[in-house]
Structures are given as structure tokens and as C-alpha cells.
Length: 167
Image (cartoon, helix red, strand yellow):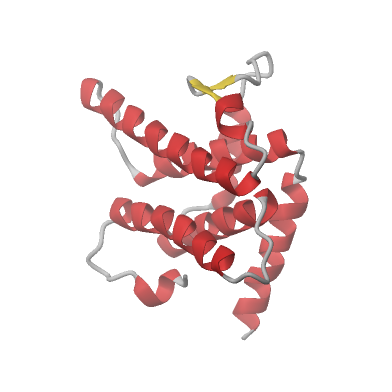
């Protein structure tokens, strides 16, 4: 879905974020409904990162700062089995990558919920920046788990964005 066409001006950035997050699942379902399409992990990641990057552009958030923050926050000694307190193998052990991605979206939603609870107990602000970072972190870990080249995926999304801007 094209965010420029749908987001009302009075909608908060956080509301827009959660709308974009819902669109990821809807866009994947739409693509999967066409029997000619074979939807796997790569296609799901492409849709999710494309929506995330479009959202960042829409609200004026530099996507590169999210990538930089992700790289700065990753502990190289952290086990692959747990990430942000979640068991990734539980989400990614599915034979069907589409079902695995659905579980990943549920895990990301739980991450939002847990972070919101943390913010209520602390002085942290529950905002769109942190939600973008949480979503990006889980998506990038999913790339690693499926051995999908994150850099190449981002290049392909950038190409799509360039083509859209030229039109």
C-alpha cells in the first residue's frame, strides 16, 4: 500500500506506524492469494522492509540511523537462540517460510507490547522510533536466520523506490 495516499495528516506517527505494520500482513496475504505467486521468506522480508522504509520516509526518519543503531545494539556474543528475550528458533523452525513469517510478526507484536509495558514502568517514551528499531531488529535477524543477504535486499528495495520516484 502506498502510505502517501492513505495517511491522514492528523494521524500520529505512532498510529501510522501500527497501520503500516498491519499492512505488512495484508500485503503478504494479498500477494499469496494469487495462485501464480510463490511467497516465501524473501518476499515477506521485501514487503516488510519496503513498508518500513516507506514509513520512515513518510515521517522524515532517516532509515540509516535505524540501521546504525541496530548494529550498535547487537551483542556479538548473544546467542542466536534468544533475541530481545524471544526464542527465535520457535519462530523460524517452520518448514513453511510464510507461516514462519506470520509467527515472526506475532513475535514482533509481543516485542512492542513488552516495550510499551517497560515504558509505563520507566521514564522511557513509547514512540515510533523505538517501534521502527524493534521491527527492523527482528526483520534483520530473520534475514540472518534464513541466510538472506540483507544488503542485496536493501539494494533491491532502493531500486524499487527509485523507479517509483521516476514515475
